[in-house]
Image 1 (cartoon, rainbow, N blue to C red):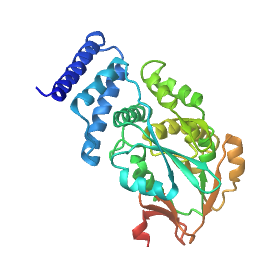
Image 2 (image 1 turned 180 degrees about the horizontal axis):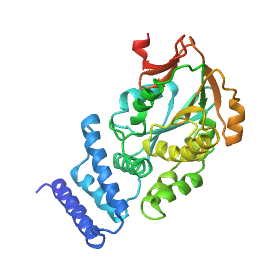
Image 3 (image 1 turned 180 degrees about the vertical axis):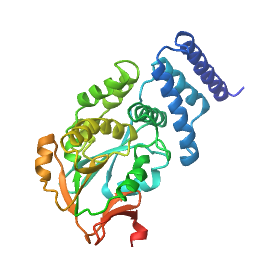
Image 4 (image 1 turned 90 degrees about the vertical axis):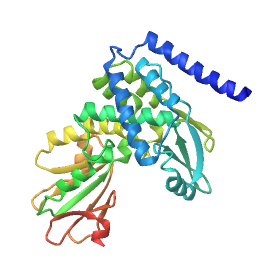
Length: 329
């Protein structure tokens, strides 16, 4: 028998034996129900990504992920890192979004150019990241959106609700990326603890937030929470940040300003004001302890791009209009 084939058979046997040992000492009927739910959500994600992205893993690896998850023994791998220019990053996103659907990136300013550190998790970790994000969405939102399990899946629902408003004189748009950039790992974990306690799932999330890369351009280590000043495509990171934003924005805003209409789409807040509203956005941000970049649109102004090919504007009759950008043009 060919030695390479022998080695392959041996490797498969070792994996099976290792999994058997895990299942012996940590059977699937573990008392940690959250781990079982996480395993189920990973299965949901894998089926969806297999259909949409042709995202496939060897069967041994896939089942090993589940065994390690329910046993509480899964360990995230060190991600790959590529340093790209802005032009190279655009090409990377276009060409590799299907096989690297959950990458993250940070920006480094150099004397000659803007350089981006692209952090590319291993495929197995992508599944676990997304499984964790689905679990947190279930625990904090009660159910998933009809159109999918991503944070952006409720985008269409928000757009439909926006379209119901009329007699709006101005829409303030607050970009909260400075606030997001100041959210610490401790703040995130304290919020997560309220939903999952301090075992198993909490440890997985803490491990994710402890990812650290070495930026060769500035010769310094960067933790994942320091990468947040650049919008992240990683779903787990966005869901975790969203948990904190719900606590520091949504709840206090509704409590202090119940008469004002506002919507939040991740780190963007849209505040609808009528003719008799006298508000100062800077004062509101200061009272809530937030930082953000403020802009606004009035009837007849150029539209604001919402994402997912949707735009937001006010027509000359002061009606809120949210539509496909191609319909608008």
